[in-house]
Length: 109
Length: 117
Image (tube, rainbow over all chains, first blue to last red; front, side, top):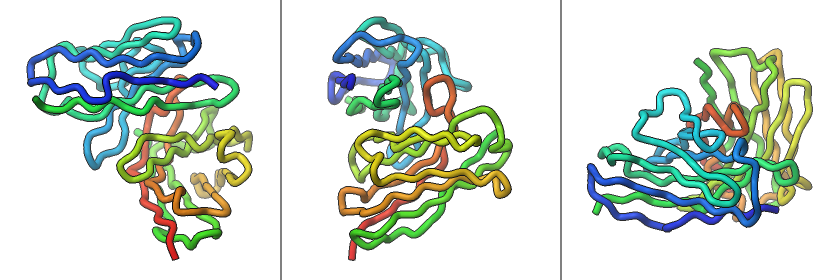
């Protein structure tokens, strides 16, 4: 089973700053199978990025995803107030199907 | 636009069976896609439970496989989840979702299920 480790656990930034969130897999994965979700407090998770770098419907272009092999990143170019949330990466594989990372919280500094 | 709405008992006794349904609207469930269940214990992260296809194919999280049953009712356009032998560790918000490209593209609002006597 491939384990996903997200870092940092918490990211404290100000609106307008750039945020870089990391997701590391315990072994090399197919980049088609790596997704990211955003979850605001008290809300449902929302698909942000799929297949490493494809933005989901309605996601603004300040969000971008990249990576390959074991290291993946989602970047928020300029934080808006509504971007402060918890972000999860997720991997699909044929043995355990879908697994999530433990999440990174982006909080207002 | 697809909409999903979970429903079911909010309280289940330990050792009992948790049963939830997810009503799907805006799209026929009878399409070539997978439908997932995901849960989230209070204050914790997300855990994928499993997925079901309208042709009754299923895939389950290996850690829950022995206790999970998922089904689909095309006449009612809804899916169902059953989780047996529940304990307090199964207390969580349960979400149903429509899969997209190796991901969960659309989510219901979720329903909290508490396991307690």
